Image 1 (cartoon, rainbow over the protein chains, first blue to last red):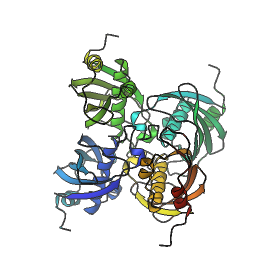
Image 2 (image 1 turned 90 degrees about the vertical axis):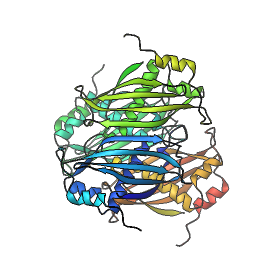
Image 3 (image 1 turned 135 degrees about the vertical axis):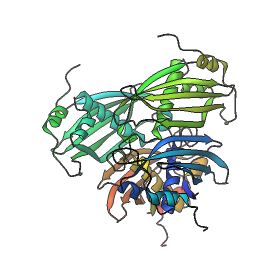
Image 4 (image 1 turned 180 degrees about the vertical axis):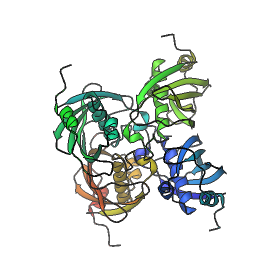
Length: 136
Length: 136
Length: 136
Length: 136
């Protein structure tokens, strides 16, 4: 299924007094990863919400292998791991400047409507997320 | 006008690699200060939103006098500084464990409706915010 | 092993445009939970760092059962789940105002020295975290 | 003096339940603005810290003119506003996708050494920040 790589730079405010990136911020990096994967698939998440479909995070997991530091340019490799009728699971790897694996994890999201009731993922979403990205 | 003191403890995730509280987090401490002042005045901000009145932040300012550190218990002294027809200005002082002034600042908020158009502050809000707190 | 309950109130800045608490903030609630468990066990984490022992987060996981909302007072029930020679695993349950389970998860932490090399947990830490809390 | 423009995209976790960017996050956007201005001037802030010079934020101010929203690509126009012997003041304008001014503000920073004592800004820093950027 679809995979996407996005780069971002660590902000000062994302570090903590240990001199490393505070662990909760990896979930924000994951968010950026899946947002950009979806955009690359022609599916801006913002437009999904405008159509009345919301993806709520129901599960997160992250293993930290090595620390990320201030000002480093990180690469987030995001892939669609599992596509259900009303759920999607993304996998993430965060790589440091020299390509070292810093963290890996996944998030599970469920599609709901404005009233927060479960709804099926629209067909075009499933199709676009399911397809592999075309060779670059 | 009304003044209120609230205490909170600095979280690890609120520090940065300088070993001090990251400056943007003071605005979250200010938020807690005014929320608790309003609650003490009988005005839970949450209920204000349920009535369709939102307070949007239009201006913030903060001067940092001395650093706050992890796990310190800070005191936030909040007061209503100016009450307009559709605006309210809060002043804040943040005090460290020994009473030292760490930071001071203000925020200006404007009252808007659900569509984000300016509206007058409800009369009971003005009354409650304008009154001094009763002696404890 | 030791269990501890701590209450905190959701800040406005912790919500997102879905009108719910943004998922990454649960990890900050977990942090508060284990910090307060440790303090109740006579082990301020700040003092541990002053002794040159740091606990770095190596793994996080969270399942979201129901949403938490602005201004709600949440209860975080934290327990020591597993104690190794140089690792400790905490389990968390986050309960809403009416006692509903909103989220549950765990974090794994490893003890390292100032140079970020693994070190054994000091004996007093293991003892204090391992013991059940005395009946209140 | 030097001016620099940097673009960034609003994250979901940076919004709040009003459906807009939470005000404290503008200070993180300001941080990114001055970091990239410094990098463009050949002065990675990270390297400044490695040389033992830290810039601590002593004052922040922000006026909000119009709201920023999720997924918008914002432009941050940063300029060096005032250069003292041991202080530097940056000015910021945040522009929305259509060029509208969303917010403007400034931050004042003081240079300190590792022990957090005031020190003069190194000569090369003053020179680089003081010069206008070459025409592109």
